[in-house]
Image (cartoon, rainbow, N blue to C red; front, side, top):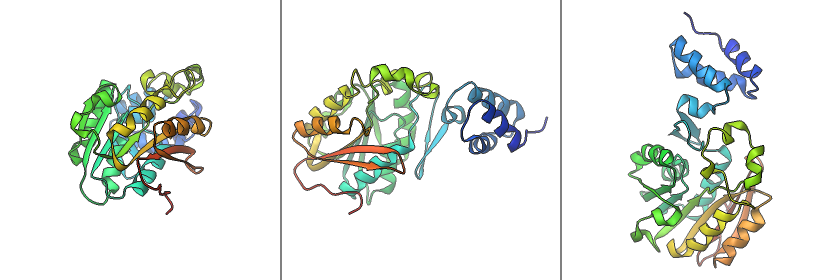
Amino acid sequence: MPLPSPAAVAGTLRAAGCVFAEDEAAVLLDATDDPAELADLIARRVAGEPLEQVVGWAQFGAVRVPVEPGVFVPRQRSRLLVDLALAAAPSPRVVVDLCCGTGALGAAVATAAAGPLELHAADLDPVAVRCAARTLAPFGGQVHRGDLYAALPAGLRGRVDLLLVNAPYVPTDAIALMPPEARLHEPRTALDGGPDGLHLHRRVAAGAPDWLAPGGALVLETSDEQAEGTAAAVRAAGLRVQAHSADELGATAVVGVRGRRLHSATE
């Protein structure tokens, strides 16, 4: 049985509501030469499973990261965190990717940083830990399972130059309004930020000064609506704060630095 044409696959995806049907069709057709396997992949996508979980990988900037069913899929907007991190510390010695998911942030920074670094990542979700271990293995990264800073080796305390965090920030009541790809196929622990979406941000901010090296930077993803609350939490922890946004990515982040002047990503 021959493979269907790209137009036929795109038509099937478009009928199911896929906005980028042509692009997704190309990815699916590139994933396999087996017609039966392709039919299964298309059926999974039509049923609402995220494309990245269907094909087993996600492209994040220059890095391709493994993605398993049930794991949080890295968003392209999170590339802002990478830009801000490298602006704050172009040659970091110690990097931590907290709430790491697939480890995309840590891998992107390790790929672009000037010089070798010590890389750690942590997540509460066992599927995320498994994916991140595969993602960060080429960089010698160590992945730990646990709740925020409790997962990290004690020897990192006071040594971290870059603390990258994409913690959940969706308010609990808003999860029901999320696209089905997220609310049905990603772990709730990767989405639910508590009643106002900032529960994890407050915990991350409060603990950051103990782990950051002098001059180290916390780079924390947030939303435009929640940026003020995220910045207030980081400021309350004693860090110097700036909020940043990138309209082309639809992204917002807050940077908090321990004990030196902040640099913007455009400097």
